[in-house]
Image: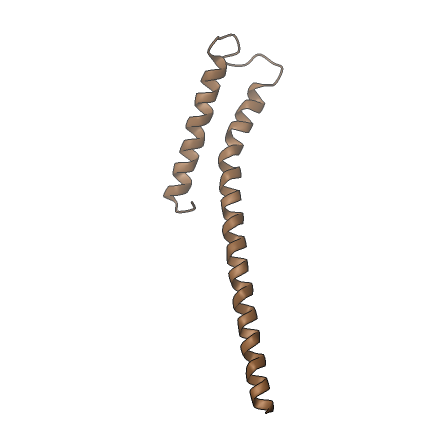
Length: 90
């Protein structure tokens, strides 16, 4: 009888470890996705942050300045996304 109880106890331990591993894997995948999003979205935030400083900057007097900076931000973000994808991080 003790061997049966011990066997079931070990089986439950293995099952608990397997469930914990599955939960950890899912959490790792979620954290990886959030990291990817934050890396790609950091680039436009940095560019607009530097462009918004109260000093003379490029494209400040231009009527297309905002669109130019926006296009540059999108291009750099896409380049970052493609680079991460090429390195199989995404």
